[in-house]
Amino acid sequence: MERKRGYERAKLLRGHEPKSGRKAEPDGLDRSDPRGMAALMDAYLVSLEVKNFSPRTVDTREYALTLFLQWSRERELKQPEAITKPILESYQRHLWHYRKKDGKPLATGTQIGRLTAVRQYFKWLCKEGWLDADPAAHLEMPKEEHRLPEDTLSEAEVAAVLNVPDINDPLGVRDRAMLELLYSTALRRAEIAHLELRDLNTDRKTIFVRKGKGSKDRVLPVGKRALFWLEQYLDRTRPLLMINMGEQALFLTGYGRGFSPNSLGNLVTKTVRQAIGNRGSCHLLRHACATHMHERGADIRVIQQLLGHSKLETTQIYTEVSIKLLQDVHDRTHPAA
Image 1 (cartoon, rainbow, N blue to C red):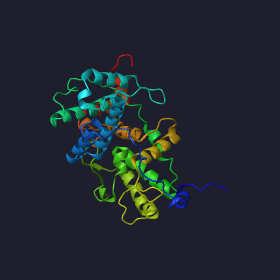
Image 2 (cartoon, rainbow, N blue to C red):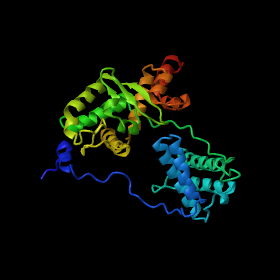
Image 3 (cartoon, one colour):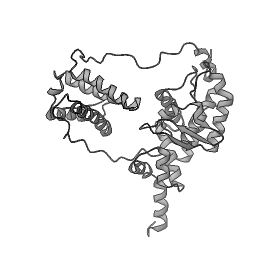
Image 4 (cartoon, one colour):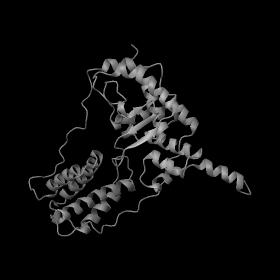
């Protein structure tokens, strides 16, 4: 029997949705001592929530600190007073030598992120009076790499990606709408996963991004083609997927719920790879949007606003790979071109 696909398969899965969220696994940390690093870490994370840090930031800090505390526990280091600058430098070397399951080292940005979480934690411990001196105050951080993104998708490759979904199937219409919106607005996967119906204004042709990276809101224009497919999705597909009338997520899974960033990212990655081979991610469409606009004359500060970057330097990394502009100028001006 032929296996059902697309929306027909989604209908069969209704009522059998897997449990959401990650499995609750004990971190193995001892919280019996209220002055121990584990118990104080919990208090620190609560303080971040009180200060209105984004849930993503709190989760990231918790993950990084848990790894550090587990490393410390293996060395019988459970009290803040036991941590010295040489010990933190030893942890820094551990991160540098660490190899993932695929044998690759941790990216420099990942190492910096984990060390930053530790440094902020000890800064808080001093501020709250748990420590007299901060052992991380003078910890020298790794030098951040100035890396260009992967080669961007060409306009033809983007077109190939957009044409992968079967638009005769309701789920294909949804996927096409998501891909078009990603390419039109350069949204991050978490940002598009968290969109709600109220965020799309078809009259004004805009999308409202609530609490993007850094908990910053921004309003972005949506192109005509993306709007067309969004309207097709809202008219033809979303009513079929909706189980709970109160569900406000803009894009719904086959189970009638909003996407998680991971599930949406996996779907897009699979689609991109299906179109152009082993080069796939939401970030490729985000980067393609910025690069193609820059190549067609968009000012870099406009690109900065589109991408939601707080620093212009971050945006410049995206646009430096716009080799087409450099080639055009080279052809026009170099004597041997």
